[in-house]
Length: 139
Image (cartoon, helix red, strand yellow):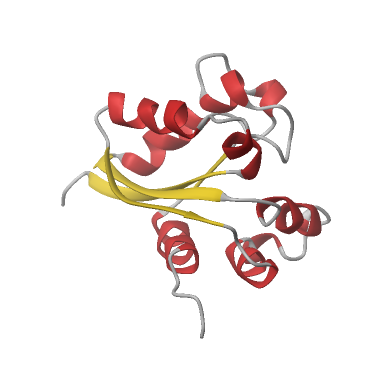
Protein backbone atom coordinates (compact mmCIF):
# COMPACT_ATOMS: atom_id res chain seq x y z
CA UNK A 1 0.00 0.00 0.00
CA UNK A 2 1.34 3.39 -0.98
CA UNK A 3 1.48 6.30 1.43
CA UNK A 4 0.95 8.69 -1.50
CA UNK A 5 -2.55 10.14 -1.45
CA UNK A 6 -4.60 13.11 -2.57
CA UNK A 7 -6.58 15.69 -0.68
CA UNK A 8 -8.63 18.77 -1.44
CA UNK A 9 -7.95 22.26 -0.20
CA UNK A 10 -10.26 25.18 -0.84
CA UNK A 11 -8.89 28.69 -0.43
CA UNK A 12 -11.90 30.53 0.98
CA UNK A 13 -13.37 33.87 -0.17
CA UNK A 14 -11.59 35.88 2.56
CA UNK A 15 -8.17 34.70 1.38
CA UNK A 16 -9.03 35.11 -2.31
CA UNK A 17 -10.17 38.70 -1.62
CA UNK A 18 -6.91 39.39 0.25
CA UNK A 19 -4.73 38.06 -2.60
CA UNK A 20 -3.35 35.11 -0.59
CA UNK A 21 -3.96 32.26 -3.05
CA UNK A 22 -0.37 32.15 -4.31
CA UNK A 23 1.14 32.39 -0.82
CA UNK A 24 -1.08 29.57 0.45
CA UNK A 25 -0.58 27.20 -2.50
CA UNK A 26 3.17 27.89 -2.52
CA UNK A 27 3.42 26.40 0.98
CA UNK A 28 2.13 23.06 -0.29
CA UNK A 29 4.46 23.09 -3.28
CA UNK A 30 7.43 24.01 -1.08
CA UNK A 31 6.57 21.04 1.16
CA UNK A 32 6.84 18.78 -1.91
CA UNK A 33 3.18 18.30 -2.76
CA UNK A 34 1.96 18.37 -6.36
CA UNK A 35 -1.08 20.39 -7.41
CA UNK A 36 -2.99 17.94 -9.61
CA UNK A 37 -6.07 20.05 -10.29
CA UNK A 38 -6.87 23.72 -9.73
CA UNK A 39 -10.06 25.69 -10.30
CA UNK A 40 -11.50 29.09 -9.43
CA UNK A 41 -15.28 29.06 -8.91
CA UNK A 42 -18.02 30.77 -6.97
CA UNK A 43 -20.11 28.09 -5.27
CA UNK A 44 -23.87 28.27 -5.55
CA UNK A 45 -25.82 27.96 -2.30
CA UNK A 46 -26.91 24.44 -3.32
CA UNK A 47 -23.33 23.40 -4.08
CA UNK A 48 -22.15 24.88 -0.76
CA UNK A 49 -24.91 23.01 1.11
CA UNK A 50 -23.83 19.77 -0.54
CA UNK A 51 -20.16 20.51 0.14
CA UNK A 52 -20.79 21.10 3.87
CA UNK A 53 -23.61 18.54 4.22
CA UNK A 54 -21.75 16.76 7.04
CA UNK A 55 -22.46 19.87 9.15
CA UNK A 56 -26.14 20.22 8.13
CA UNK A 57 -27.50 19.63 11.67
CA UNK A 58 -25.06 22.02 13.35
CA UNK A 59 -25.98 25.59 14.34
CA UNK A 60 -23.19 27.12 12.21
CA UNK A 61 -24.25 25.37 8.96
CA UNK A 62 -25.98 28.44 7.43
CA UNK A 63 -23.02 30.65 8.27
CA UNK A 64 -20.62 28.19 6.57
CA UNK A 65 -22.80 27.97 3.46
CA UNK A 66 -23.29 31.73 3.22
CA UNK A 67 -19.59 32.44 3.67
CA UNK A 68 -18.17 29.84 1.24
CA UNK A 69 -20.65 31.00 -1.43
CA UNK A 70 -20.02 34.74 -0.81
CA UNK A 71 -17.29 35.06 -3.44
CA UNK A 72 -14.73 33.20 -5.53
CA UNK A 73 -12.83 30.28 -4.03
CA UNK A 74 -9.90 28.27 -5.36
CA UNK A 75 -10.00 24.50 -5.06
CA UNK A 76 -6.90 22.37 -5.48
CA UNK A 77 -6.39 18.63 -5.45
CA UNK A 78 -2.98 18.15 -3.87
CA UNK A 79 -1.10 14.88 -3.82
CA UNK A 80 1.93 13.53 -2.04
CA UNK A 81 3.13 11.45 0.88
CA UNK A 82 0.51 11.31 3.65
CA UNK A 83 -1.21 14.32 2.06
CA UNK A 84 -4.38 14.33 4.17
CA UNK A 85 -2.73 14.35 7.61
CA UNK A 86 0.20 16.55 6.57
CA UNK A 87 -1.99 19.17 4.89
CA UNK A 88 -4.27 19.27 7.94
CA UNK A 89 -1.24 19.95 10.17
CA UNK A 90 -0.06 22.67 7.78
CA UNK A 91 -3.52 24.27 7.79
CA UNK A 92 -3.79 24.49 11.60
CA UNK A 93 -6.66 24.70 14.05
CA UNK A 94 -10.10 25.73 12.76
CA UNK A 95 -10.26 28.73 15.10
CA UNK A 96 -7.61 31.06 13.69
CA UNK A 97 -6.79 32.49 17.10
CA UNK A 98 -5.95 28.96 18.32
CA UNK A 99 -3.90 28.01 15.25
CA UNK A 100 -0.15 27.88 15.79
CA UNK A 101 2.13 30.43 14.18
CA UNK A 102 3.59 28.92 11.03
CA UNK A 103 0.31 27.25 10.05
CA UNK A 104 -1.80 28.74 7.27
CA UNK A 105 -4.64 29.69 9.61
CA UNK A 106 -2.24 30.88 12.29
CA UNK A 107 -0.48 33.17 9.83
CA UNK A 108 -3.41 34.33 7.65
CA UNK A 109 -6.72 33.51 9.38
CA UNK A 110 -8.86 36.26 10.85
CA UNK A 111 -11.53 34.29 12.70
CA UNK A 112 -13.63 31.13 12.80
CA UNK A 113 -15.44 31.22 9.47
CA UNK A 114 -12.95 33.55 7.78
CA UNK A 115 -10.07 31.16 8.47
CA UNK A 116 -8.69 31.26 4.89
CA UNK A 117 -8.80 27.56 3.96
CA UNK A 118 -10.69 24.27 4.05
CA UNK A 119 -8.88 20.92 3.89
CA UNK A 120 -10.42 17.45 3.66
CA UNK A 121 -10.09 15.53 6.93
CA UNK A 122 -10.23 11.97 5.53
CA UNK A 123 -10.13 9.99 2.29
CA UNK A 124 -13.94 9.71 2.39
CA UNK A 125 -14.29 13.48 2.83
CA UNK A 126 -11.82 14.11 -0.01
CA UNK A 127 -13.74 11.86 -2.41
CA UNK A 128 -17.08 13.48 -1.60
CA UNK A 129 -15.80 17.07 -1.45
CA UNK A 130 -13.79 16.96 -4.66
CA UNK A 131 -16.75 15.46 -6.54
CA UNK A 132 -18.95 18.32 -5.30
CA UNK A 133 -16.34 21.01 -5.93
CA UNK A 134 -15.38 19.93 -9.44
CA UNK A 135 -18.92 18.91 -10.49
CA UNK A 136 -19.92 20.18 -13.89
CA UNK A 137 -22.50 22.95 -13.74
CA UNK A 138 -25.92 21.85 -14.94
CA UNK A 139 -27.16 23.28 -18.18
